[in-house]
Image (tube, rainbow, N blue to C red):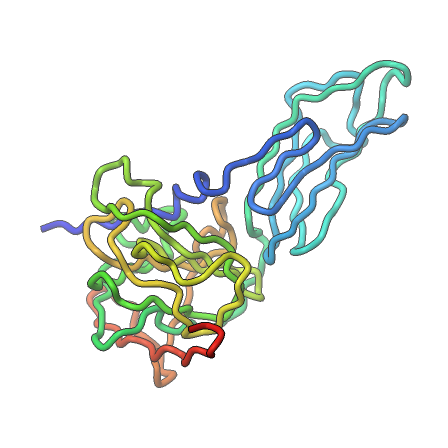
Length: 287
């Protein structure tokens, strides 16, 4: 019987981080683009409050009494916890009104990010080894931008552990259904953890009741939640990948290596039974 595994991280990020628009701002995640008017013209500024770089594209459908000082389109990477001026425009008529039809795209991460050569821990615990049922360049759903993804088959309720220390960037929780109905494409529980090198790890199809919150620092081996069968998935499993971009390319997923509990390399060939990690001991504040 053919197993079906989803591209869940392809879809859900858009629905759980919608753009917020105002008269003079547009935000997605914790990233905002604002504009300021002056006698000389207008400037557009981006503020990135996330722990990873962000990639912003800014252009214009229409301009009224404004002219860019330089190119009329910009793609810029904003470092974590920082701000930058994206573009300045000058007035054509100093006394006339101004206006602009703006196109803005905001994506977490950067294609130019140089991820380090960190060797990741196995992202699940428990007492039994779990089969790697779809690996890199998997023929079912690990194609294109999702080619460097890993699917581990496991029963619901298996502990899902952080494969690397970092900060929780995104949590989607509360869903209970799973299956192959396309209506479930955006209805999976997941956790995304940002790493100090600018990369991000995604843990998908979790059971309802994620154990971490956005902004929380986690250590390797720390419990994130439990495996489930939520979203578009043919059977219970954990989807895991690391990337330099949340949605864009190149770098949406990147190749990684993995180590077992003894520190030895894990064979990431499909069909391999992978031994679980040993969870770290929780501190009293985490219990």
